Length: 183
Image 1 (cartoon, rainbow, N blue to C red):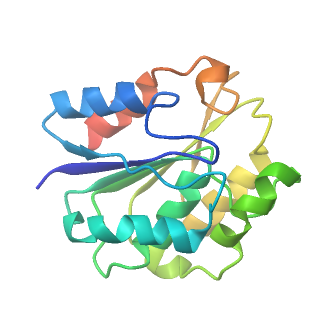
Image 2 (cartoon, helix red, strand yellow):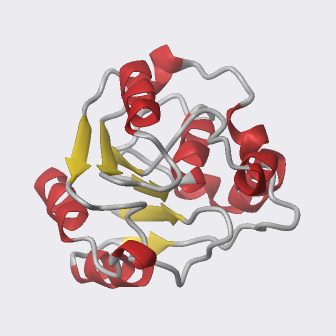
């Protein structure tokens, strides 16, 4: 079953940024698209997000694609560690694996990356990492750190900011093109 999971970031939800647009575009391509609502900022923790995700675990298969924005990208790493087989492809947008130096985010995001990751097993998946130049939250160095751990490359988008609505991203054509190229 060809399906896609899209995970929002902190202080966000399924109707933010480019998520609703991407959901519609993927459905046109025949994907079943699942966009869970996670608790944020209140009760945001890795444990609580995994509890929400539990009901979707049986939907994961080798044709699954996963897309995450910001802490949603980091969350994908913990999701993937629960499965022995890799998924089709993974798209991390503005992801990170350590503190950002921003109290309002670090306090609610910490549990997502304070753990040890099984990088060797994670690398069995095919990753595409997107970074917006001028991101006010995530540094390019942080993005390269993530890419190095996953043995992947960073796709830098000129003047992309946090690749969210505030940066003009209610649509994300390059992301859709990459997904189409892998389906």
